[in-house]
Length: 112
Length: 113
Image (cartoon, rainbow over the protein chains, first blue to last red):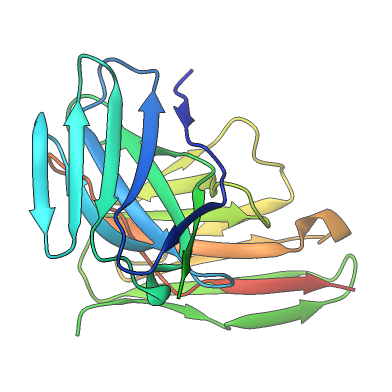
């Protein structure tokens, strides 16, 4: 049974600070990892994906993957009030075509 | 722009009255998914199509059916909606490959009266 665990939050950070969102997963064979942002009442929007150990940066966002620890994180630098949303971690499995398992998400609140 | 489109964005139905939600995509992706998402919960996969092959999740109620008449379109039919079926229904697509990234449509908010 694949499981993806996230702290539901809310995680509150002041504007301009770094927000750190964490996710652990149980399937050691997982290969691809995704972060989605979901505003209230809207659909998930892809922020980043990562499949190699280490860091991947895209603008203010950095995804970090540690397969040995089964841990993936998302850092948001210079947090803005517009970043306030729920962040969903999603994980898929080994090889080709697979479904993803979503975490329940972490709610981020950026305080002006 | 290539995208995933869902119609309608909001659907109100009565208890037991069949409803159909639609999804179309211009991404030419070979996999299409239907998810149900309730408040503060993770999206729950109902079923998906890999090309024409239908894959039902074991815990998806029989009340939910799906059709994919061609690559671009996929439909979700709820035969007899109950109050517990009120939710956001999300369509997503992906192209089979190493990352299998899923791209979501805007969703359809279903209200059951």
